[in-house]
Length: 168
Image 1 (cartoon, rainbow, N blue to C red):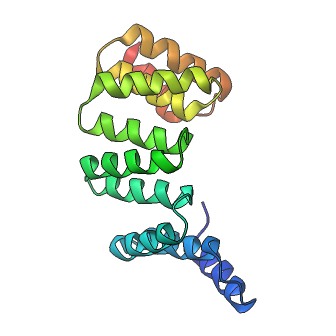
Image 2 (cartoon, rainbow, N blue to C red):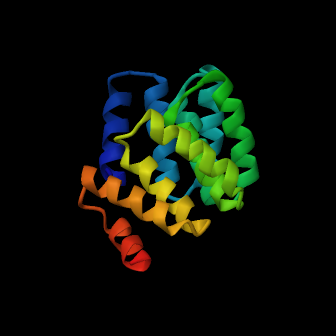
């Protein structure tokens, strides 16, 4: 990703040109998040969403901050609300699945991820999450099959090589 400095420079340039857009506000929220100022980031994200409830990037970062803070139930609640305004948003659904996994809702998470993998068969992020779910429920055969499928798309994934090493 970009460094904080690069992000700050972009924000400054945009502000100098007198641009006042939600994209800049979002860059600002993201910079706060990257600096570890999650409370400030969340406040900024709420402001963005009040102005534009369909600004999906703000929904995704909001859910990500909640998940990383261990607030999985809150994250799922927020994501469900977000999906009402941004239905079918792939990143939001992935976030939801990651939160379900974190609170051990394996069957719902697996179902959701499995549906996503049928819709986006070439998405390695989804395939890796699916392999993870299978591994967690100890369906090692399925985990290996999905991991190998993902590696055929992108061979350069150290996490999957580790997973396959464990499964071997």
